[in-house]
Length: 116
Image: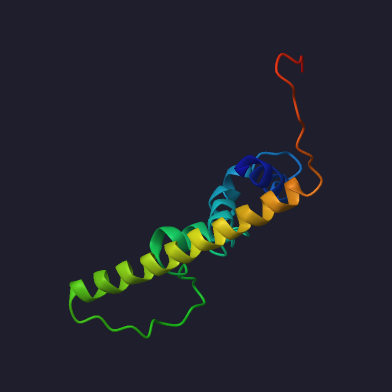
């Protein structure tokens, strides 16, 4: 699945001689990892790190941590919430996909010793 997204993006950005593709690898992977997944409603980055990525244009954080354990506790809480929501969204997406797939499917009936 990744290659189906990655290769066309790389092809759009490289020059006509195809000799500068390596300059775009980090940007394409970052874009892929920060893109929101339809099934989970979160990006891979958020699921792994429990927060949105820091961008150069972002302002400083409003969080003030006085002890390292404060940061750890906040991160743990964020990851638990995000991952639970992502699991719920993924299950919901799976159920909808199954319902769509099964919509026009009939259940065949087979007799014993019948060749299929």
